[in-house]
Length: 71
Image (cartoon, rainbow, N blue to C red):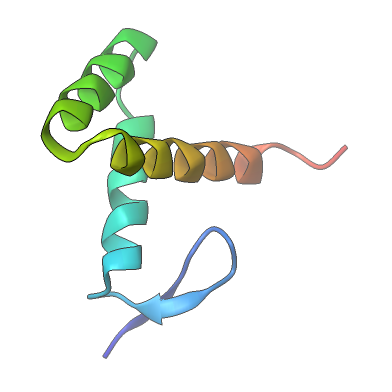
């Protein structure tokens, strides 16, 4: 078992759904343009529903906030 730390500080197994979710959010945030990110999320919403996309957006926001330098 390999453990990883999520953006919120939770330690989970690298095979967990929580880690898969965060990796997916990280991948989406790395898309080159806002249009690309929006298109990806719209496609996911059609396949998985609004709640899944809202959860990804919340994780993406947390990842963005974690990258900001402290003020």
